[in-house]
Length: 214
Image 1 (cartoon, rainbow, N blue to C red):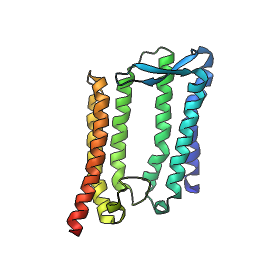
Image 2 (spheres, helix red, strand yellow):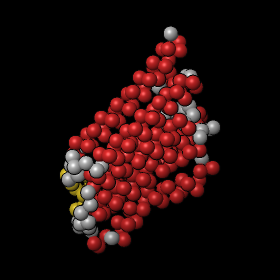
Image 3 (cartoon, rainbow, N blue to C red):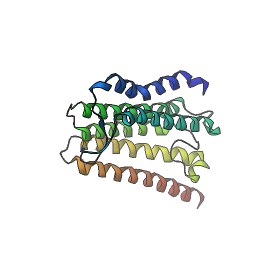
Image 4 (cartoon, rainbow, N blue to C red):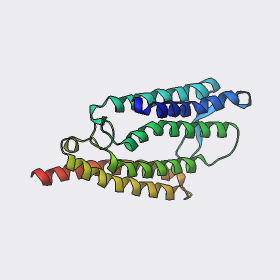
């Protein structure tokens, strides 16, 4: 964890950046701020200015630290690929910046197409994650953590190469969905693609195991 101290500090500050922006814009913000959008990109949940500006970034900071600590206390991550660990360090900051931008822009009446922004973000996240999966070594916290892959390094490598292609492919599809007019359906398709990619990866790992062990 000491080797990533600088990145951990920087990533934590990025998680809290929307809080700082909210405080700077405090007097320009309404008493009630948007905090949830439906699949069509319409605001369907509101919260007080204090809760949205302060509580959401702090909650994400806690999630960030839980994820990072879980990865670093995993004994199998001592020799983990640095890029794979780096991905864990930057996911929560990216989510926090996106959520903060969505909230503040909506509160200030900027009129952005939130659903397209979310789809673009998810598409990029899928593609980046897919590219990093083959670099990930066996561990208990990152990747496709089924027992057949954890017990067999060859299975783990094959499963993550297969999953990599799936996640990158799903990411490309999601990016294309961002430019189609039916955004409300698109987010449900994203959920379906996520489930399909996860189940297919687990099934591939099991089939690999059965073929190898009979």
